[in-house]
Image 1 (cartoon, rainbow, N blue to C red):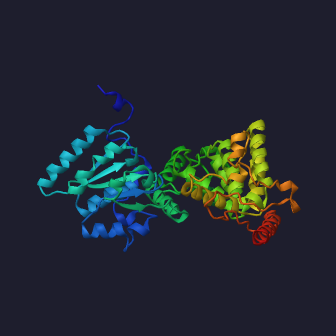
Image 2 (image 1 turned 135 degrees about the horizontal axis):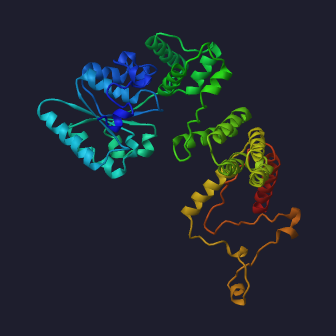
Length: 435
């Protein structure tokens, strides 16, 4: 009697997915990673020398991490063992290490491939150290996340990190040609629709082959147009995870585009973040930060407008409120820039840490009691409004601390007027101190 797996067609004879059937059989067949696998590529040279170092393969989904690890083991003559951090625990690791130890006594090296290695916790990652260090296993870890954030420093120090690139259009087109050769028939797509499908894959070769397999499975009497392709295939969600590296990459791109006075690029990154599902209020907070840090007193109204845009989104919600965020992005990107306040505050914070115990000078201390007056609190204070030009030029720094200049306006936008006033006050202060 057939079991449930046989009834579902999940037998050894069941056809494998197209992406699996087209899996490269040698490193020469891997596309899009010539910087690693070309004649002078570091991984290619390891394979040729048949001496492998432990490594981390970091790259987007569908770029060939698993395939490279499998082929590397084959070409270097290593036994290939595979674990997934999603499904494996400490017991699985112990079994893998023990099996590798037994092979080693027989003269056989082991390449241990760990998919999604970043999903192992810190203690589990530490468990690899003695076996990697002693050479019981050569570790090849695959991750889509930044190893600097997700992997232990001790493990990273024992591994080389190789960055896999998202597949470009030429590499993706090569995969489609291989699919057509394997199927012995062209994809039922018009040229524009073919380009649209490549764009839809967004650098993911496995996903592109899955789309191609879908088209072959449904069949079509005539080549599909771009519109018809869109009706057949669902649009892929953007590669964006709000608590992973892609989130911080796009936030950085938005902020730096604003700082670089490029409203078009800033609008693009804003749209990317919102399309990826980012909380618009988080974006608004980042824009408030940009207004304070990068524009500052060159256009003081930017901070007011940033808060107004946040309130507008809070009031309207999506999608209408997103227009206010877009308007703010354009305003900030095209506003005059100055980080003088930001830089001045950092310098003031450093000075405060150095001189944190110094008291204010006695002439600017309040004296609400007779005792405090007798102690000289407030004595000699000059009320600036009663002074010539409304400026006394007195010292407000602690006794025993030389006057420092933290705020140095750059003279852009509204700061030009501020700079002029500060220069006049500095000259008056110097004149009075000499008099």
